[in-house]
Length: 280
Image (cartoon, rainbow, N blue to C red; front, side, top):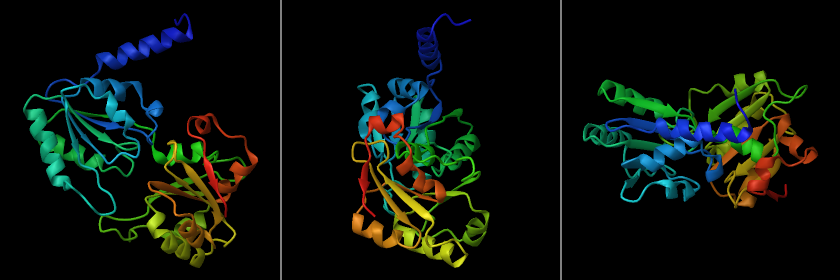
């Protein structure tokens, strides 16, 4: 039985410390959307105890300050098709580090298993017989709408959410996504890494019957001091986004809920990184 809320925090901190990576293990750790305050206790403890950290091109690098002095930091992030270390080499470095007896952390933006290729790394580790585990992170698909005051679901407005990626490994729009089906399903679409393909996405949804007046919001650099939110519509979002010159990373939210933030009070998350609203 808990005595007070502070006991919960102490217990959680002790639990995180007791479950840090062990020599020869690899932890796939979610760094969240960028604000270090949204990092989990377990993720923070893993960084403090790691010997080797392979990290993405994180939108907020403050979380890297948690890595202990003397640990090896290796940047392996991909940006707009540029990959300083191809995925097979990342897998090999994780395996080599674990076999050398290091405590290895693969630090990934958002959540490792949401468009983060964490599944591929887990497969490689399992095939090599390396012990591994996942530390979930706050996905940008959840954090960006919340930071902008946009509920992904809302009674009477949206009862379904679809998460999609805006580009495949070659940089094009994924051929496996049935945009016509998404248009028929309705609800909310949250598109990751979609800013550069927004014109194609909008055209496909419009061609499939989504109304040009469908609200669209683009949340750039969610949870960071430079956060900006563009409110637009499916018919004009491409031009509006170009004019706004939004920075990446950005999440595109399509659906009626995208218009709700103007009628809601800012959430607590917005106090951490106040949103700069971009005019339509």
